[in-house]
Image (cartoon, rainbow, N blue to C red; front, side, top):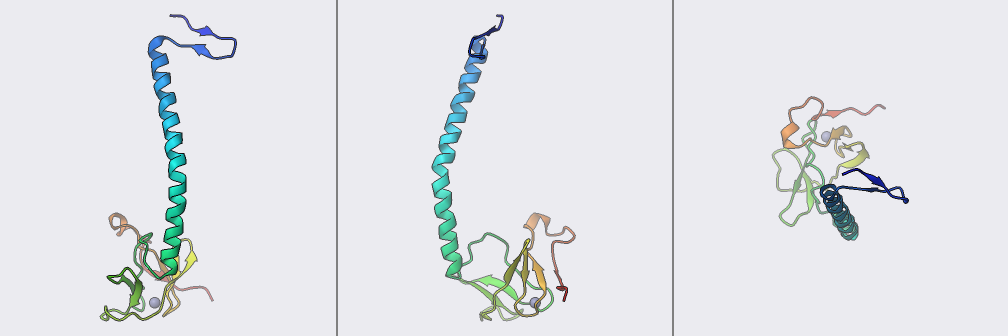
Length: 137
Ligand SMILES: [Zn+2]
């Protein structure tokens, strides 16, 4: 079947291609509707995470930190609070908190060195994903 260009610039497609085009249009419309329904939920989730973080809860948006130099490491209490402990002292919260300085780096509140967020378990052994580095003075 020859293609026919319509005055509006569109092309009349053969029936099989028209059906594929209609399905693609339906899928794209459904996808747009889904994204529009998801957008406010994502905003609500971001606000809830921000509130939880402000309350001192760990929102699991990254791996827990551990400073390889001084042994201070993060842990999560049964009630979800983020805490830090020294090696061998897993119960008492030191009250110190790692401070994010950007780019996936945090400053250890104890020894002041930079600590990288550990990569996911699958890439733990990649070079450069663990350890701390000293800040330039
Ligand atoms: Zn440290």
